[in-house]
Amino acid sequence: MEKVVIIGSGCAGLTAALYTARANLRPLVLTGRQPGGLLTTTTVVENYPGFPEGIDGYELMVRMQKQAERFGARVQFGTVEGVNLSGQPFSLTVDGEQVQAETIIIASGASHRHLNLESELKLETKGVTYCATCDGALPMFRNQPLVVVGGGDSACEEATYLTRFGSTVYLVHRRNALRASKIMAERTLAHEKIKPVWNSVVTEVLDVKQEKVTGVRLKNVETGSEQVLDAAGVFVAIGHVPNTQIFKGLIHMDEHGYIIPKQGTATNVPGVFVAGDCADRIYRQAVTAAGLGCAAAIDAERFLAARNE
Ligand SMILES: Cc1cc2nc3c(=O)[nH]c(=O)nc-3n(C[C@H](O)[C@H](O)[C@H](O)COP(=O)(O)OP(=O)(O)OC[C@H]3O[C@@H](n4cnc5c(N)ncnc54)[C@H](O)[C@@H]3O)c2cc1C
Image: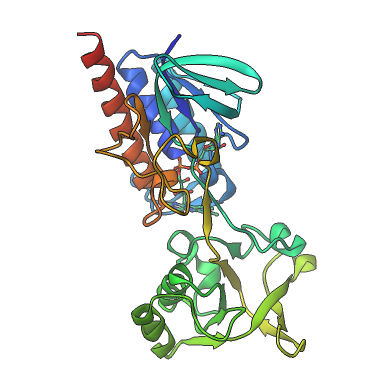
């Protein structure tokens, strides 16, 4: 029987592991298919406090894991396929095996939606990115034309943020009007650096041969005509999908699948806590995920202490 099982090994999960390990709870961390989480897919992280020169995303996550392990956290490769939260102890199905737990911290993150282009995949971290706040300030994007793909609030926010760095920001949207809220759409379209490209989809990110982004090939969905836009970066902002499907119907979530905590990090099921991007559709940063991981660990620790009084 585990005292604490942490689902996910990103910033939220490993911070929760550090805190619960230091509280002598010997947490079991289940890594899922992406050990270290989303940050392992990026090269330099420049906004995680404590690293004035920036740090490689993969290295940061290896360090977080080592730090948690130093105090007794056990990190195990495994994906949770199902949970039974109907009573104590909870049971989890992990790659076909059963694990029982007194408390669970859900830190399963959110995956970004892809354009599903082969060229997009090949140029990820070479100019294709999914987070303007994270990558917009990198030297490769400064004073260069940039492309944002999407038409919702996130796409508008990304485009507006990128005007600080890029020379021109093309906002490529498959419809002829933005889906974003009226005020956000108006503000975005009024910006002199933002140029909308309507009724268009990206069919290829250029240039895989050069191993860096030099532009995008677009297709007009109305006329079928093609054009090429020069750009040094492609920011894909077509939404995120929280990795919470296995909790559907058990844990309260919004219509997009983001978990809604009841109080602090506590969910509607006593003993189940949540941290990080799977419960955060607004900030989605490493440091906020880590902060919530800390909070969930403290909440779990207090829950166990109260139970054993
Ligand atoms: C390209 C890129 C660059 C970024 N750069 C920055 C940056 O510079 N600065 C910054 O602050 N933020 C950055 N971010 C955002 C940052 O990565 C996230 O905010 C952060 O990783 C969220 O942490 P998390 O622990 O909530 O989730 P994640 O890091 O997504 O981790 C989720 C974990 O849950 C696991 N998991 C999922 N489902 C299951 C399951 N069923 N069973 C077991 N485990 C499961 C996954 O394998 C993974 O280990 C970047 C994101 C991307 C994509």
